[in-house]
Image (cartoon, rainbow, N blue to C red; front, side, top):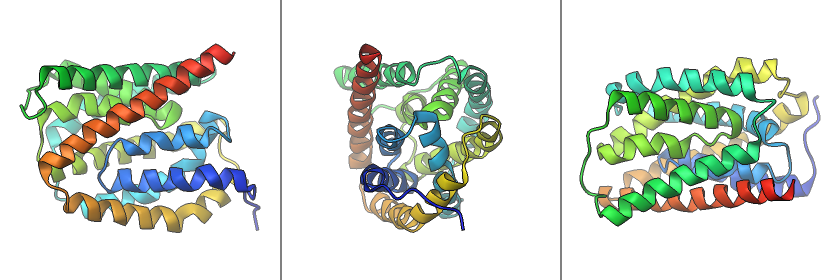
Length: 254
């Protein structure tokens, strides 16, 4: 039997991280962005991302079934090719790009986007987004997801302004990141990020991850659309602040 991580300090950060992931996969997109930074308090960021990947894929399968009828094909057609390019760049530059720099960039993007929306008071007005910007933000999302599982904020920068129906937004997010997560398996193996200890630990965390996933689905279906979007923007802003703080703090400590 493969051993698993037994240090209580690990589970002090891993359990909240898995709960955040479950709520995110259940529909509160963005809150899961905090999972890898939490786990990175104990493990190197890329190793933390790899440990979470089996959990993410299991949660993806549940959410794909729940939201199988609610998704927007246009956004997926535009953003997924960009995401593949972004992940390829992440794979090629994983040894050279600082995790803290990636966190800081994602944080800046998220804070600037939400601040712009709030200052313009345009949260309730749907906007038409260009195909070029969709490929770009899909690429940024793919890159940051590969490096730190932090692809949520760039994805939301493109999709939230469209004001899609609530369940359509959740389903589109689910399919996008399910594809992205599945495509990470090969590169993570190639980079040597999977270990038997980490995989056994991922399996041990699955029951809690699945429970949190269904809790997220339950909450999303009972949250009014207007309130749902308000929560999404607030979560994106708070998570971006945390990422910015972690990234800048990490770079200053070097």
